[in-house]
Image 1 (cartoon, rainbow, N blue to C red):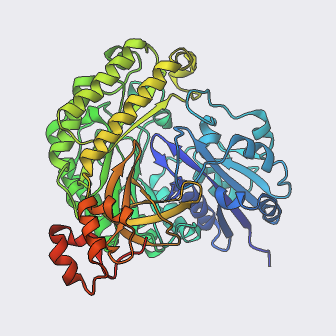
Image 2: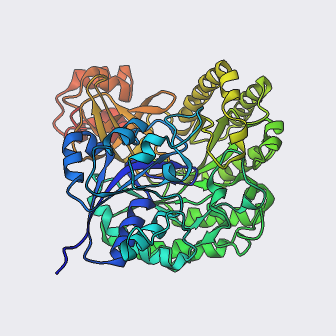
Length: 570
């Protein structure tokens, strides 16, 4: 009897315009790849490891990799940023590690294989010869399409450029591969599964945004609600409790019969209702259900239907959700030259509409649904005036009293197949000082929006401890979900803990907070002052030790929830 095939999946993490896989997220790639192998042969032995796990002992990883029949590497941060939960695989690691992995058949998949890889924005993405030479196959099509043929027929008959047109089969593969999530280091804690609802972008008809690769997937292909629900159910049975419908260009148009026919399809609130109701029924104890991308152009062109779609999302999701809006620029000239989605006044209108229906505060301490703003620097037609207009736009949003969850500013990563390939990075280089200034201005507004979003004393519920930084003596923590607020806690907290925190300070990208309730008898005067103010902290310090919370109550009144005699020691 033949031995079962042994497969090792190394997750080097992905970050794409539609799709995210840096911890605590797990993207569709490892699940689909595992599912394709298991659908072809259920006896296949598959092990999953993240690049951060491999880095702890590179020599040991290479020795281990050489014991498998097949090694699949997932890579590709094509919208690179700064990450708290992990670091995507670096170009140098792809070059060096896999020259030393000699025995197995080596496959590179993901955005790096399809579009190229760049270490940071403002560069041209490519896949160097040294990387190509380190692998037996570079999958330039859909990884699950290649893997299922490779598993069934061998490498000779598998086509690495093949596209998966049968989304029903994708549904079967997704269900089969769901249990690979059990091997993720964040499993059982804050692991968030990225869920795909459709591929490509409706704007593929017009060529889409100049810098974006999403439209290069071709005519949009939608998944049936029942197939998405079955995948969520399989993940839920595998222990996943956090989900994001993030792998699509615009969640508002999921289920629209016009999606593959019109550049600006009309949303179908009924389709979203079927999808979200099904997810809630299949995963009744889920803790997070969020979205990601929303096209502001859809909102302003189909306002009535978009509002109904937003209301539907809010009815079924969990609070703290973020609708990431790719406004990219506030310069009308740049909008036109790059075939972007909305003019500045339209972008502002989309922000106002999301605020109107999503700003009510939910049970976890955050509003139901807020916009996130994406800016891209270095696009065709950009001038010094572009940067002035971008600054004016942020000023207008703030002065109108609106809420924004986060502002993301990145330099364009020039990818093959996009129209920006003919422009390159010359504008990034020309406007380097302007970009630095705009990033500084964006950081100032990011802090102002955080102060508006979470006033001092606000409480965030169910915050997951992520790691302790011994150099800064700060513990980093976040809620689970789309673009969660990073919390810096000025004391050492280790291990898997889920706590509530009260906000006392701000920076551009995070808030500062303390676990609550804090131990009234043991907390230092400094920490008490951060939480309840100097005068009251001094009074607490003078009167302690307290024998019970009833004594505290008489002193603290409305701040009673912040301290306790049996509270958190920090």
